[in-house]
Structure formats: structure tokens, C-alpha cells
Length: 330
Picture 1 (cartoon, one colour):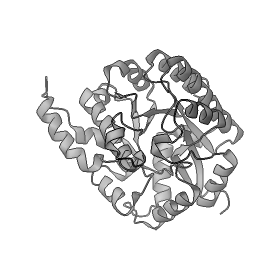
Picture 2 (tube, one colour):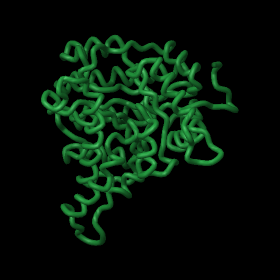
Picture 3 (spheres, one colour):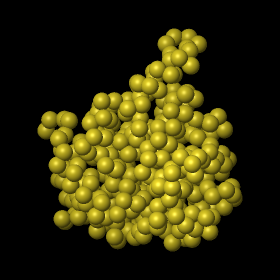
């Protein structure tokens, strides 16, 4: 397939990863030889990524660092690594105008370091948002210690891309199997539930949150979460918090096995204008992305007259308008 033309802009991939040699060395030195129980690290290059994109009709990929993130236990090292990977991503964006964007990594749970990197990445590097792991060393995103970071992200109206990682209990709960298979979908639900229960999403309505992997377990847990919020978070004034309504206000990417069951379940919770395309490359290998695109293109679309490409790309460009104007800086 040739590169998409302006008349056929192609998919916008909001869930795409990159791995540099330096990042890989530092992660391995910190003990992540088998990241999240996966047998080996993937390789990545901009050239291979562009070849995959052109073959599958992907116009733009928004890069981010996947699990295990950038904080391996030392705040100062995490600050340096976050700065390094963000500058690496910005360089890729500059070298391939219109083909890449990026979500900046933050050295959470180091709040001062995260606030400094957030400002640098958004204001100086032109990041399109930030990526947050579902937890860092057991600190989940609703933790009150992270409130200054969410306040600043909300003030800026920033896009926040969530990415799952292993829970702290994985040694017992994963049963020796790769954590992305089951643990990731539940850690996604766990951290979003934490944000709901902590009131973070209500306090900061400017946040624009992308939930990965078709929402993980959230579509089938939404009513249960809502019921418990009504039981255990009685209103001070007015009505109790509505978890379902808040979940409907988030965005959801289609990475992973979206069909035949995940997307229909998700559409029972949210409207089609909240769906975004995601490949999960390079952690999903190229042949897996090829198969995923084929399944997406063959699936029924919930909006008459649309394709999955036109629907998700329109949603992405509304959420990330600078992707359509790569020459503009914030």
C-alpha cells in the first residue's frame, strides 16, 4: 500500500510505542529483562514503523513509552530518563513531519519532577499529551499525592493517555503467565476506578483521558462500579457521583483483540465518537498489526456512511487537532 494521500488520510494511531537502545539498557539494568513477564523486548526503528504504517494505511502514529515506564526506583534517574525519551520522541516527530506525534513520559510518583517535565514536554518539545502508567510502585492515579499533577494537566486541558503495567501483586495474581494477558486489563480498570472514587475526574473536567485496550474490564464493570460509588460515596449536596456518566466522557482506543466481542461491549457504554484506533506496535509485532487492521476493516461500523478509519480518524483529529497541522507548536 502506498502512503495515504490527503484525500484518504489514513488511521491516526494513538496507541503506538517506541523503544530506544538507551532505554532498553537502563530498563534491563533495573531488572526488567523479561518486561511484565513477556519473553523478550521488541525492536523498534522509525523506518520499520513507517513501513508498517504505509502498508496498513496509518497516516500518523502517536508514540509513547510502554510499561514499565521510566521510574525504576530512583527519582533522579527517572527524571533523566523521562527527559531523554521525550527528547528522542520529539526528534522522531521533527524528522518525519506529519507521520508521528508523541505522548510525553513523566517520572511519577515524583511529583516535582513530573511537573517540571510536563511543562518542558508540552511547552518546549510540543508533546501532544502525556502517558501515565496505571500505577508506579503501587501508587495508583487517584492517590492524593498526585493531585498537583492532575490539577496542572486539567488546567491545560491536556490529553492523558493511560497505559497498563503490572500490579504490585503480580507475583501471586499472574500465576506465572505474561501480565499483559489478564493483569493489564484489570489494572486499567483498577486505576480508572481509583480516579472515579477519588473524584479526580470530577475535580478536573479539563482532562481528556484515553483508556487503552477497549477499556479493559471497564465495560462489564461500569454498572458495578457505579453501584458501589452510590453506596459508599454519598453526596454532600446534590446527587451522588455517576460513574457511568464519567466513563462515557472518556476516550477509548481499539488496541488488542477488539473484535468480535470487545468493541460491541464497549459500545454498550460509550458513543462511537469516543473510539480511537490503536495498534500497540511495537509490542504487538508487525504481523499482529496486519491482522488487527484486517479485522477492524472487516467489522461492521456503528455509524452509517462511515468506515472505522474515517470514524476513528475524525475522533482523533478532534481530540488532537495539532496532528492535522504538524507545523504548529503549542
